[in-house]
Amino acid sequence: MPRAARTPERDGLADALREARQAEAAHFEATLELRDSKSLRLQLLKDDLLPQLEASPAARELFDLALIPGEPPKLWIDLISYVVMEPDHRSYRFLQHRQDHREILFESHDRELMAAAIRRHMAHLVVARERQAAASLPAPARPPGYSSASLILAWASGFAFGALALLGLAIHQGLLRP
Image (tube, rainbow, N blue to C red; front, side, top):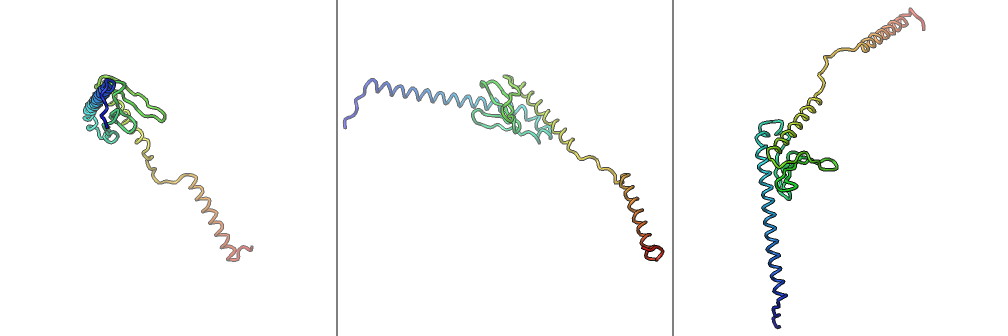
C-alpha cells in the first residue's frame, strides 16, 4: 500500500494539533498552579487560626479546621461554614450553607481581616452553645414537701375512713341496727 503523500494541509493540521496540545498542557499546568496557590493561601489562613482554636477547649470541641483539596479547595471551619478563594485566587470568601442557599458571611483580600472575621464567628457560636447548655440544665430540685391540697385531701380521707370504721364497729356491737 503506498504511503500517503504529505500535503501542506496535512502538515498544517499536525502543527495545529501539536500547538493545541501544548496550549492545553500549559493551561493544565496553570490551573494546577492556581489551585496550589489557593490551597497554600488557605493553609496560611488555617495556620493563623490554629493557635486560637487550640487555646480554647470549647472551640476545640466545636470546630475542626479541615483543608479539603478539590476545585475549589475549601477550608472548612465547622459543618456548614467554609472559606474558598473566590471570585479570584486572591480573595477570601467565607460562606455558610443555609437550607436553600449559601450566604456570604465575609469577603476580603486581606488574610488578617478574614482570620478576624472567622474568630468572631467562632466566638459567637461558642457563646450560643454555652447559652444553649445553660438553658438545658435541669431546674434545681425542690426539697420534699407536701402541698396544702394534698394535706387537706389526706385529712378528709382519714376523717371519712375513721367515721366509717366507728360506724361499722357500732353495727357490729349491736349499738346501731341497720
